Image (cartoon, rainbow, N blue to C red; front, side, top):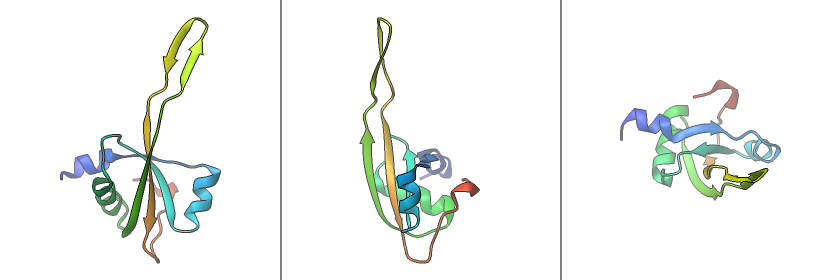
Length: 97
């Protein structure tokens, strides 16, 4: 797999109260490409941050239907990945990819 694709898989880190709490336990949350599978996500994280990944869990977030006056639209569907790192490894979210 090309390095260009690996770097496109990781969209951005999710920084919420829940994800910051999980980060103290070695679990980090990222928005990822919708078409990426767990193996590709694992390779992308290990390549970008030089860490060892133990487990990858994913979840799909369906886009909300929104109304503005009489017109109806929908937000885009996204995919989140929960990354569990091996003990002794950490990711500095402020560092970036």
